[in-house]
Amino acid sequence: MKIAVLAGDGIGREIIPQALKALRAVEPRPGAFEFREAPVGGAGLDAAGDALPPATLELAQWADAVLFGAVGDPRYDSLPPGQMPGSAIRRLRKGLNFYANLRPVKLYPELRDASTLKPEVIDGLDLLIVRELSGDVYYGTPRGPVENARGEREVVNTMRYSASEIERIGHVAFQAARGRGRRVCSVDKANVLEVMKLWREVMTEVGQQYPDVQLTHLYVDAAAMNLMRDPRQFDVIVTSNLFGDILSDQASMLTGSIGLLPSASFGQERGALYEPIHGSAPDIAGQDRANPIAAILSAAMMLRHSFRMAAEAERIEAAVGRVLASGIVTADLGAVGGRVVGTEAFGDAVAAVLRAG
Ligand code: NAI
Ligand code: MG
Figure 1: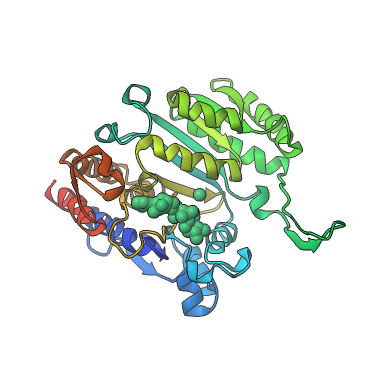
Figure 2: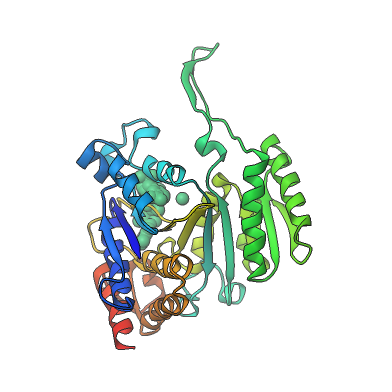
C-alpha cells in the first residue's frame, strides 16, 4: 500500500504525524504501509521554488493514496494566487484528475455540547457533502486587473461548468445516497446564475436514473440557513466547488470545530487524496494547539476507501471517540470542558487506545 505523505505547511506538519501514528497502530504487518514524504505549498516553494514541485506531483501519481495536511504560508502572501502555496492543492487535484470530494459531517455524541447548535437540534447528525472539485470559478480564466472605462482596477473570474462535469458529480452523489438515507439535496443558485441553471437541469436528469433516491433542490442561501435551522433534514448535499467549500466550513461548526472534518477526493482513475477540510491555520501553527482529529479521520477514510480496510477505519474512528469520552480535548473544543491537551498528546492518546485494543 503506497501512501504519499504531503504534510504541507503550518499545522499540516503537526497534525499529519498524529494521523501516521494512528495508521502505524493498525498496520496489518510491519512495512504494509509504504510511506513516502514530499514538500508541498510553502514547503515546496522553499525546497524547489514551486508550490507543487514536479517530484511531488509524481509521488502523488505513484501512490495508491495521498495523505495531505494543508497548504498556506503568510510568507508568500504577495505572490499571485496561481503561485501561492494554496495553489498547490488545486493543481494537485487537477493533476490527478480528481473531481469529487466527499465531506462527511458527523457528530461525535461526546461533543454534542461543542456544537454551535442546541443538542436537541444536532443529536445524531450525519450528513455528507459531495463537493464538485474540478470546475467553477476556481478553474475559470481570471482576467485582469485591467483599467476599466472609469479608470479603476477591474478583475474578472469566470464561473463555468460543462454538462458532463455536473453529470459525473451527480452520479457520485446519488450512488453515495444509495449507501445512506437515499436523499440528495442539490444546492445551486439557479435563480441568478446561468451556470447554476444548467447545474439544476443536469442534476434533475441524473436524478431520473435513480428513482429510489429522492432529489430536492435548494438555493445556496436557503441551504446555508437550513444548515443552521435543522441540519438533520439533510442526507447527501451535492454542490459546486465554491458553494461546497463554504457550506462545509459552515457545517463543520455543527460538529464542534473545523478541526474535526476529514475529506476524500477522487476521480475516475485510480488513486485518491485524503485531507482535513481546514487550512494551515497560521494563527495557531507551531503552538501544539491544532486539533488532529480531522487528519486522523482522513487516514481512516483512506483505509476504508483506498485499501478496503473498513474494520481498521472503524477502530480509528472509535478510538477518537474513546479519547473524547475520557474527557481529553484540544483547545478548540475546550468549551465542552474536559482536559485540554496539545496536538501531540491527543495523537498519542488515540494511538495508545489503538495499541491497547
Ligand atoms: P484555516 O482553515 O486554516 O483556519 C480557519 C480558522 O480555524 C483559524 O482560526 C484556525 O486556527 C482554525 N483551525 C483550522 N484548523 C484547525 C484545527 N485543526 N484545530 C484547531 N483550529 C483550527 O483557514 P484560513 O485561516 O482562512 O486559511 C489559512 C491558510 O490555509 C491560507 O493560506 C489558506 O489559503 C489555506 N487553506 C488551505 C487549505 C488546504 O490546504 N486544503 C484549505 C483552506 C485554506
Ligand atoms: Mg475551504
